[in-house]
Image (cartoon, rainbow, N blue to C red; front, top):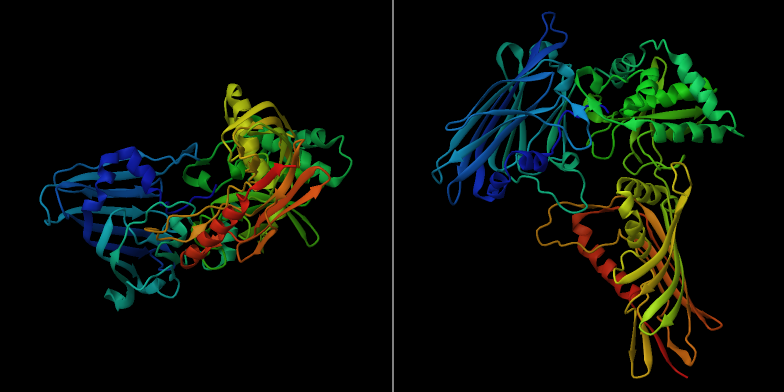
Length: 608
């Protein structure tokens, strides 16, 4: 996985350090913050030799005494020269995100006691970036609310024409100007007021993609120069490739066609190579040798992609490495040619104008289905000394299918019968990954919950799973069910609560304090087909009216009909747009409530 220069994982850091500090953050504000970056040139003036930074933060308590938290990230290519605050000592810890096995990210933090309301307490950090390419992004918000902040970047005269700054997600409370410095230097000055600390919200874009920030470009003059750097890290000679080739030939020996060969190799890597993310120094960007990944039976996304590439080449395919930034990266290769624009590597098979993307880390995701995190993202594809810049297709919601078929009979107050749920695409991947991760003793219980979700008052028996494999097109869960209290009998009439559509992606959001847009995980389509036997001695008094809707975000249909003595319900909901602007969230909530109301309309049976 390519290194992310700046990671906004404050909640994880707070939890690691002191939950009590974060709990009091509403009482602590940053009254002022001064952040200064000085870029130094090499002796010939053509490149960046290093970057020095100094950050001074003044904290205040607004109501009662409390604690402030000041922190800075660093790694093998950056070092903390100074960290100080009155009445507190700096602590240094390794910081490894939950999805990373090992990296070189570290955090320096100071928990600062503030004993008097309204009296500022200053923390100071001085830092040095020893590799220019790792000074690529500066994010403006802090973990406490900010009253006033200034960020300055000094560019020496010899680099003024080379270093450029790209501004993203600026708001009206941020101003920019350029000042003249000494010896022809230029100083970019950003001033901001009343900037709130980002808060976690349900189903929203990653903070790192929407907060005000700047990217510093010019370390690589063009995207081609960045590609040459990254590609140069992949060309180490692999002296044990024969073992890789032999394994690839064995995997594909019984395959009938090219698609089957690709599928088998992808499945083998997903099944047999354990994904372990390692980001340490140069190994944040340099892939491991394919033969080493094969020998060790583990690798990160880069190593797994290299193994896929070499295996596919061994059996005759034009396979290439692909550098990509997932949707939690706020920049693209074409607008920001720096390491900050990428955090992932996959593989591609190129055949004429056709490109098939393969991700060895996406276990249980079938060939040809792309994870939602890379759909619509720029892919920089290996092409010898040059590169291809393509966009990963945004796939139809139909690729992620959640289909339920059920047959019920009414027994007293229950719907009793058989149900099967078929999952494809990302829905299949998520279900299989969850099933794999739970203890074997809990797997049956998991199947019971999934097959009737979101209903909970259900007795489930004889649950079965089919298609539980890495490259199966779908996984199917079936069971016998007794949906308790799904029917109410009143004055000789039976009221049936069927609730045919069971999408987990259509939710109503609390908007009272929400600050950010809504971003749903992925597009999908839910289909439901239900048959209910009409009990002897009863007839249908009324069925819910046909419901159809087609709006900006989803389309849906619920249709009830009769087939002899059977009530038939056919329904679907297709989520086609996963972004809901905050300004549209009220409309979204209204549409979802209407959908839920129609979905809960009752069937009414009466005595003949």
